[in-house]
Every structure is written in C-alpha cells, then in structure tokens.
Image (cartoon, rainbow, N blue to C red; front, side, top):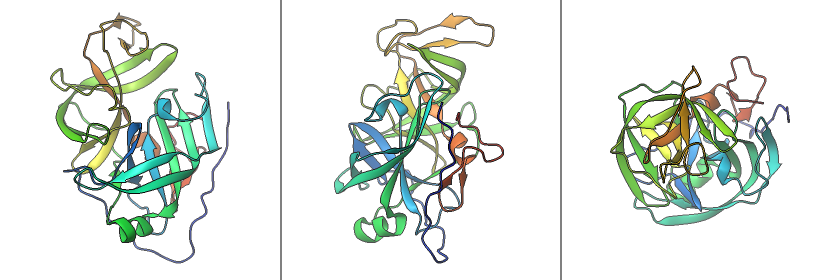
Length: 261
C-alpha cells in the first residue's frame, strides 16, 4: 500500500476564494470517456491548481488492487472542459493523478497545470464545490453527465452499508430512487445537491446479476447479500474534503482524513 503526504505547490500571493458554478447545467463538467467535473474545496483560492474528479475505475493507468491507493502518479489524461450547454470549450491535460482508489470508495483526483483563475479567464467556466457534509436520505440531487450531456433529477433513496462488485468493496454508498436511470457512460458524473457535489456516480446493476462486473450487489452489516436489476449507486465525496488542506494540498495523514491510504 502506498502511503504519502502530497504537497501541491501553491502560487505565491493571497487570492480570494474562487466562486463556484451553479449546478443547473453542464458548466464545469469534463468529458474523458467517463464523465467528470472540475472541483474545488470550500476554501480553495482562485490561484490554486485546478482539480478534476472522476471514478477510480476511469483511471487510465494500471487499476489499483483491492486495499491499494495510488498516490501522486504521473498522468497525461486528456479531457474536454464543457460549458453550460455541453459544448467543449477547451482540451486540457492532467499533469498528476493525485489519488486513485477502488477501496472503500471509487475516485480519481487529477491535478491540472492551470489554476481556477486561468480557466475562468480563458474559458468562462467555474468549478463545482465539494460539500463537506454527508448527504441525507430523501435529498433531491442532480446527476450531471458530460457523457450524455444531461442533468437527471433524482433522489437519494438510502445508503448501502457495502456495495460489492467483483473484488471491489465500497462503503456507505448512495443508492438512488428506483426511477433514477443513470447507465453506462455516467461513471464519474457529479451528484449535486444545493449547488454542491455530494457524490459521483459509479455503478449500476445492468442485468440482475449479483456481485459481478456491472452487476453490483449490496451487503448489510450482518452479511446478507441482495441485488436488484437497475439499482444504481454513487460514492460519497465529502471524504475528500477531510484530506485536503489550503492550497489544494492533499494530506492523507491529516487528522480526521477519511480516505484510505
């Protein structure tokens, strides 16, 4: 298992916190095969290097093994930044994959060379803000997909104690209401409530199978397994905010950090 503390080089000078985009359209999402989004912490500044969030299973390199987190990996991932109408306004490349895991959660956090201020100045696109709070059952959410170029209205039906898909196990997973239809290509889509990102879509049960690829199952705290065709899930993202310091510095040893190291 890789254990490191990352120091992202913050630019000199004091900068005001960069404003966030409203999640009523596709502005701030990125297309990279999977869906994704340009994201910030509540205290990120305009001159911080910009971050992009998608799923761990969307990482272009070797997939991390169960119980492994990949930290500060080289990346040349190409992605298109979208405006509110879903038009690509820029092609961007990541310069690092700061964090990748399929253990407990399903996330890849990329760093770009550009700052939030540069992206807004050149392309008039602002980032979405990661919520620092755990979402609640019954909450209205939007699944904002750069792949489908759609914003789906959904609800949080509840939380799965564990979701199993092949050898990967995620914890405290958002389950949408049965009428919510995200499917293939929606992986990495930000799940937005009240203008902030509370999760990212990561999987759904396509065929009614149990605990296999593209057919995740749920396990309760007593070990009981269940699966339902069409059930769809999102991994929570407030964990990330517990591990990021000012200047967009990722520190897996920060007190209270919830991300597996």
